[in-house]
Image 1 (cartoon, protein in one colour):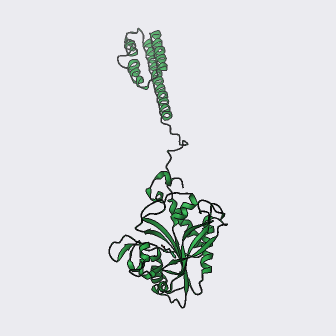
Image 2 (image 1 turned 60 degrees about the vertical axis):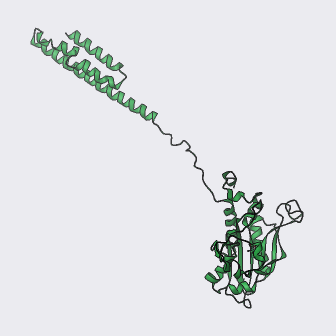
Image 3 (image 1 turned 90 degrees about the vertical axis):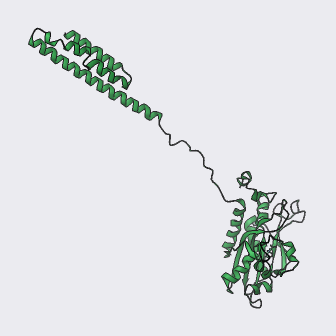
Length: 343
Ligand code: PHE
């Protein structure tokens, strides 16, 4: 019996050592320790052993073997469970150092980058940024700016009318009047720039759009002259295009300024020598300017005998087109990401 038992033990231990599947352990428990196992069958024969000593000894050996097999099963089970966990962890491992899926970061529209640049230049010179409405009354858009009803200058700034008295503003000059009347209220100095969207009934082409932007400047104080206009414009041009750029004021006409001047910058492509962009002149026109007309000062609540002022206005689209070599004004509004992502 002893040999039988030892043989059973060796067989069981060898089988347990060789098992590689945690699920099979339970089967083995039944096979080697269950009621119908070989071990149970052999031990069932204990009663037939001739002496008490033999029975006792074989019983004890049987128990030892049961214990040994149980232990071996438990140990193997634990080993397999650990290995399984290890394998799962390895399979499900996340490499936190892998680069993630890129999220494309947006950025400010190129036109607003340029407008912000212009604002920064003027803020540094002590100007305030003023904004007002895009839907405006005839009075703020035209009449207060010395363009009475029926004035021929209206033809150059035809707009989209909502009613006889309300229109989409044709320039940001309405902000000048609103600032004088609603914010400054006769106080000096006034130093503002007015960026914003304007509308005209224009036929669209590479350089004209029915919706575009303007940046205007307005300064009012005692003793303001054209010299300070030229100084501010020069500062602005240098801030945008570099230290070598110059400004030229060319006599012109605007109803809201007297005298009036077109403002040119020295050609940023040829440095003033003359090239295709400046059509050989060495200068590029970028906007209008002049001394604020007495009627405009009056409309804004200022006495032209007491104070004087200057104003200028230009389109930041044109500046952006020059700065970045953009050939068509319509690119700014098509929303084509291939265009916008370049800047
Ligand atoms: N508001 C004018 C325009 O749209 C531009 C301008 C502003 C000209 C101030 C002179 C002075 O044409």
